[in-house]
Structure formats: structure tokens, C-alpha cells
Image: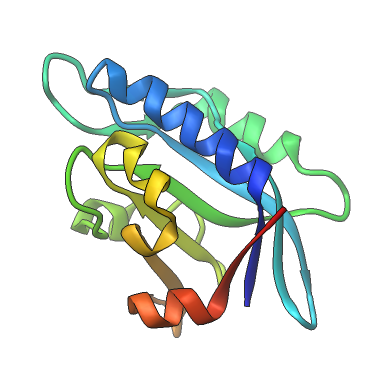
Length: 152
């Protein structure tokens, strides 16, 4: 089970849509804690990143962004999910598979379509994946509805 605070998702959506206005992708992480009941996201963090220019759609976290991501964690917190935007449909690309940012078993990956606008329709319009046996496995829309909850 993945529970996400609405404010964290709203912050991610605002970040992606702001980048998307300029035709750029964005990436970030959702932080929180893990319990016996599941994963609980409390916040969104966007590390320093460079993005493609002139119609090239790609995003890469800088070394400074990687360091800031590590330093931004509180002592009882972990990065639960990577969340990033794509210019069109939501899917995990081969580049996403090779450069996952998170590799822990049970980690989540969320790909938001249409430069972040897809979040306006909720997570069922996104590609939601879970790291299982060292591979990313995409959840069906039905499984997303069953396993992911947005909290007030």
C-alpha cells in the first residue's frame, strides 16, 4: 500500500507543470516513511537538475542535486518514490530503467504524462511501477486504485 499526502502530490504537479510550460520534463522524489501497513509519503523534493533544450526532452539530476537529495532526508525518513514527467504518454522508458534514482526493493516509480498535466486526472492516468525482484513492474489501473491512496 502507498499513501500519498495530497500536498506532496500537489507540489509535484505544480513543479512539473511549471517546467512543462517551457516544454521541459522534470524529476523529483517523494519522501516519507515505511511502516508495517505500507509506504507513507509526506513530501515532494525536486533536486537540482538539468533538462533538454530546444525540444529535446530529457532530465538529469546534477551531482549537487544528488548530494542535496541525500542531505534532505530526515533521520527517520526515506525516499519512497521517484516521480517524473514525460511530454506525452506515461511509460517507463529504457532510460528510466537504466537510471532509476531509487533501486531499493519495494521502491515506487511514477511517470506523469503531458508535462505534469496528467496528475489533474489522478494517478490512474500515470504509469505507476514498483521495484520487485530487481525489476520495475507496472501496476494496472485497477491495482493503482487498490494499492495507492491519496490522503487529505
